[in-house]
Image (cartoon, rainbow, N blue to C red; front, side, top):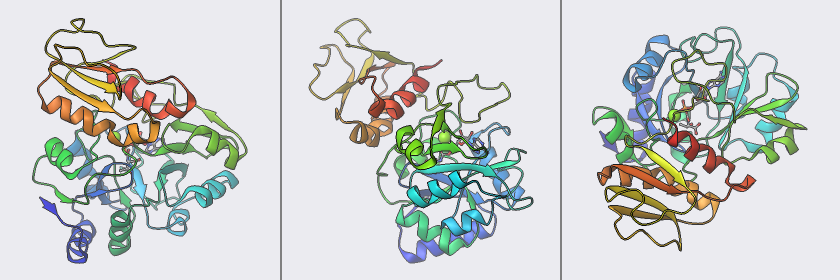
Amino acid sequence: MRLPTDPAAIERAAELLRAGGLVAFPTETVYGLGARADDDAAVGRIFALKGRPADNPTIVHVASAEAAFALVDSPSDAARSLAQAFWPGPLTLVVRAKPGAVSAVARAGGATVALRVPAHPVARALLLAAGVPVAAPSANRSTAISPTTAEHVEKSLGGGVLVLDAGPTGFGIESTIVDVTSSLAVVLRRGSVSREEIARVAGGARDAADRVEVEGAPMRAPGAMARHYAPRVPLLLTALPSAAAFGSGAGYLLLEGAIAPSDAAAVRFSPAEPAAYAALLYASLHALEDAGVDRIVVQEPPVTPEWAAVNDRLRRASAR
Ligand code: TXA
Ligand code: MG
């Protein structure tokens, strides 16, 4: 059920969270499916609804850096500097969890926890009203395309979940994840905050986001599953989509200015600028999927550092 984002709705959603229920809410990246992070049973409901493997931990969201560090065991200097520079915002920090502070289900049994202070005003209002840390993965079935609108949430999870509807999210792809448990920061997932920005603030950073793993195998770097963010139909990445090569059932996601094949079943155009492209990417994939195409052919964006986060998502979406 979709609710507007007025104070009464936010209070109702906060009440539901405190009682151990699930609430889907907007963040500046994608919509999250939240449950109170200090309650094993509540967090377990997220895994059940998403069909998420129990060995894949969730990000825990809090209203402030102060609330975040209350959950951390001996934070590193890099953790402090990155939080100072990028929170609130699309950055997630993996830190050592203070014993007993966060549900073991949210941590997937590990000693670390992924923390994020979102910038979206509705997320912030909800977290403040709830007064508890909120575990929230993206609000979609496991491995499907992430939701950037409340409609996407309902399409993936059904109408039974309460969704605070604030319209489309701004960044459109998930937060950058950085492991700051050791002296050198490690980028585990690319996002709007680039590795270069992380390295500048943290005094260096290693990039582990290229390491992909097979779904189902025990995860050394959770979140690095090869097949992720995937539409229901095959997605193909190609330099220059040409007429007839992919059949008349194919849908195309092209860069602005490209010429669509004459036999395309559906076509979407993306801005040729990385941030604007990212903001629309998942909505375009959802729309092509909804148009009933039998495959999605994506014109490959440039392979340059500015496009790293977008190319990462496209590569994972095309993995079978
Ligand atoms: O932008 C985002 O990060 C969104 C919004 C809702 O905040 N959330 C999101 O959650 O993308 P999810 O669960 O779809 O992706 C979180 C990723 C997972 O791939 C998980 O494996 C990884 O974060 N992760 C969570 N806890 C971790 C930990 N302790 N160590 C390493 N990776 C972790
Ligand atoms: Mg996800």
